[in-house]
Length: 420
Image (cartoon, rainbow, N blue to C red; front, side, top):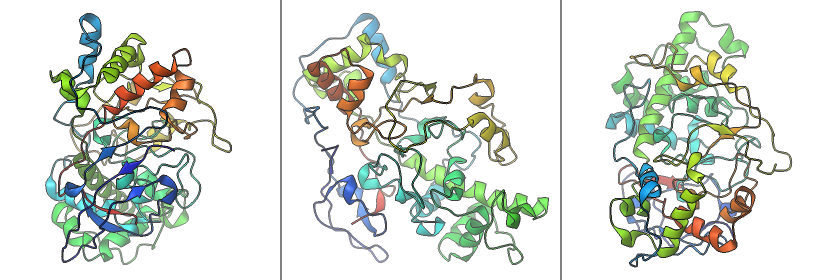
């Protein structure tokens, strides 16, 4: 059995909210993004239950495990999660609450196409879908990572072909395998939605006259390509603004510091002895050479020899080429001043089988693992990634990784539509 997420959900009544009540135990195989109800996550008590084979248990007892000092202690401090989020490059709206509320509505708006963002990022599954390869309009090519704490990253998609959190959603909206929509369809949807339009226009100004615009179309399709340059710019501006609102919401959708952070701040009761042993092992095995920093990722690209899932796409796209031609990159017209110098400008050529190092924050909640989801459990990951360690050492590492889970965000950012 893979990671299970159990939550106690209280009844919440509201004029516009459908409410789920009960005590669900959600497994990825039962996820159905077509039916939704709103959950007040302030009433959700998260129980981080078993990771397959990992013997991970909630443990608040006084720890008597490994004591870190010297180089190991100094290196451990790099994991401390800052309370403040990093600046959002290219998005001057990123920290406005009204923009985040618009973004929350957009994130859960099925009108974006094919069930919207929750089709692959379900809140009760830690904003994953628990599937090896995500299923949108068609069968995807990659495992869907959690969107929790995405605002703390600077490289997006497994191959890095988006350089900001606000440009990333446009790819998903227009992908034939994901939402299968287009920027023209998105613009018309905003104009015609009586809830979204006034919120959008209060922030970004009046939507343009679209009476002569085709109902759908994106680059590479005649409906968009035959528009004059000024109209294309208007369409692109709407798409960019939608992305910026979604980023503003995702900045609110961040988990808090976890047991590891409280341990690093001096509360030794936060980690059990086996978790402390796992932390020491993580450092002595130099796992932090790739999984370092507060998000436990170097955000670089590596070919670590993970197995291939049958039928999965084996190679990454040429991310540099995609970035250079994307009008929404951080060097483009739609990035807010001051202009940014994205890291990809100086990144060397990346091998086609090298994928982004995933963050380990909340990793115990986000099975399966790897760019193609070929590894069902953390034990499976360690069997490939650290085959020379014993079963007990794998268990200690898994116990440590469970300490990287944070609490879910507060209301109103955790009033989420969820499957039933």
